[in-house]
Structure formats: C-alpha cells, structure tokens
Image (cartoon, rainbow, N blue to C red):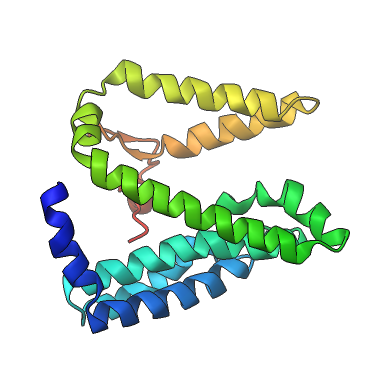
Length: 205
C-alpha cells in the first residue's frame, strides 16, 4: 500500500485534479451549509460531470464534495441551529449556544480545525491500514453484523429516554422500511406487495 503513495502524489498535483478538488470543495460547502440539500444531493448533482473526466479526477471531485459537504453542514448547525447534514447534528449542541453568546466565529474555527485534523488522521489511518482493515472486514459473519444492530437499537433506547414509546415506534418503522426489497445475503424479495419499485434495490448513485 505504501509503495503507491508517490504515484498518488503525482496524481494529486495534476492541474485537472487540483481544479476538480477546488470546485468540489466549494460546491460541497455550499450544498452542506444549505439545510435540506445535503451530501447525497451534492453527489447526485455532480454525477453527470464525471462522465467527461478521467477516473482519478472524477473520484477526486466526488470525494471533495462528500468531505466538504459534511464540514459545510456544521456552519448552519452553529449559526442557525439547523444542521445542514445529518453528520453535523452534534455541532448543534455546543456550536449554537456558543454562537448565541457571541462566539460563533470561535465555534466555526473549532469545527474547521476538527474537520481538518479528523480528515488528515483518517487519511493516514486509511493509507497505513487499508489492507489490514479489508482482511478484517472479510472475516465478518452474521454474529458480527448482528452486534452493531443491537448496539443501534440500544442507542435508540438511550436517546429516547423520556419518550420511549416514540423512540421504539420510530425504530420499528425504520426496521420495517429497511426490510423492504431484496435481502442482501439471499436475494429473496421481501414486502414488495407486487410493486415493481419495492421489489428492487434502490440505489442513490
């Protein structure tokens, strides 16, 4: 994995890729900062442009939109108490109170620094451990898949403290919607009700 780093750096400093990264970053921040748009819409809007690009440039464009849109969502979360992306929901708890007392610029600075440090750290971990992580992921079986599901339901119960009925009802609706369509393991169609749109897997892109 490490031996490909010099080749990757050669691609990064290409003019086309740098331009794609700049455009993708600006577009991602704008899309992420506008509540109701979000990361997925930004990626969908960029899909038509990738057909005229080299593969590396297209991947750079999509990655820059994805990463910067998550950062952009923290801006609206801090300034107007509405996260632009679901990933920025936690910024509401501390960022918006800071903005209300006049420290909005400080909160935005913290969000920018946290996004930069987290992104660089994740990149380093990916470069150093991608191969090992892939080998580890291949060992996942039904038990390992079931454990995060139990953890997610436990998190629902924790978040819904005081409104347990609403939380359990929301979790039940979410589980039912997740079961519609083909099973990822067996391919069996579930809860399609003889509807073509419910009998196939819906992909965002």
